[in-house]
Length: 566
Image 1 (cartoon, one colour):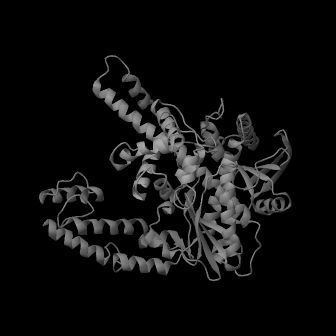
Image 2 (cartoon, helix red, strand yellow; image 1 turned 90 degrees about the vertical axis):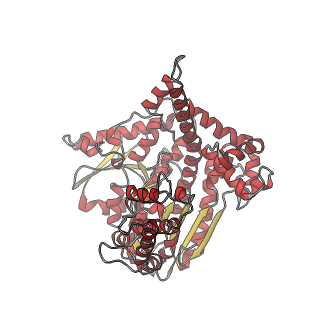
Image 3 (tube, one colour; image 1 turned 60 degrees about the vertical axis):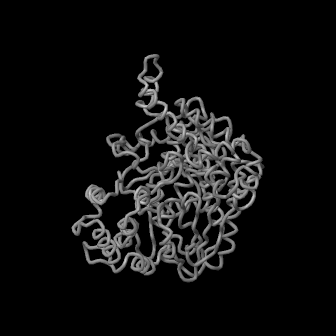
């Protein structure tokens, strides 16, 4: 990722004033207008490309989902941005400064709520000058909040979040290489013969018949939970739901085929032939990513289920001829982030190498890798029962700093307070109902049932804040990793052999997929080793950007392969 903004950096506010009109406003060092260029939509791409080629300024945009998508459609890429919508959400809620950014419905993400007006909805009846004034004031207000922070963490977070907005749009345009024939073959092998419209695949039909036979109901509709529960109760399977966990606890001949049927049904519904027809075109899967779509800063997806692709379909992710994939993921990212945040040298020692859980066993905290996994996950998610609850106290003795950090975050949440990630993204406050319940439980004559409920809800919120600081910091590391990878790939030259379906990325190595702690690059064969090294260097830089010289290992499982199959 490029360095955070400096006073001498060229900055241009780029705004749409309507379907056909744009304005570009260059700012001086005091955030005042220094120059203005009015553009028609037909001239926008050429003008931006020219300025980008000469100076690569930081483009101040409402959001990449609008402005950058328009530019990418014309084949124009930019290096840097300040995304006003994404940064608004961070700076509005941060507890890193005494006076966060005032909230404004005009600057909320459009997909976050159907009722929140966009900037252009809010100023629909006003002049273009009013729209410009509102955008400039928002940017200046954001800059004031960032400047008020005690260090550069908010600056880095906003830069990384804005880069993430650009990357999300680039990955949508480039797409993930997808072999439809391989996908079809996997579905046929797993589900059976493809059904005629309205029917089910042959293997699901056979399993359904087995279930109906064992339940003694030849007409039972297996996808109706109410009817299925009644049928199960009739044969003595006393369950309250049809979840696989509850069903698996019962011994009845109908259970095994029913669980198999439900598994196949999930695949058919989520990633079956209908999904393939809707989301894969011209050899590319193009999901809609939502950077910062989860409250912790993790990404979400608005379509295509990009963040929930089953492992069984990974063989369908295949590089184009003459190209290859670089696939990399991080082992146990969240506990590594916890060790570094807490400056827990003992836990950092356990993380030295590829398997943190093996390091926890070597420390003597637990006896087996399985116990180590239960204990570490229990510590981050606030487990109090079962194996995790039993093992977590052992971690407090061996890794006191790490455990103190998450325990403190939990106590803050239980008290209704706010916690923050390493770079300053802050958790939401509990709801009004939650606060009212806690207040009702404090009275001397409070109903014991209300007190018990309030304590339970407080513990639940404490588990949320406990995990928030860890998951959110891991999301920040991943954002910087992504941005650093992108920056390095931009330095590589174009190649002769094209991947035409990738649009403006047809001749250059590019990011094609991102899932929390995993990336997939689509790369010309001649750049494969260089791109792989870029991924490694980016991971090391992301770690240093966050934690300086603290000795925490964040190793990658990286491979260069034709397919994403593991």
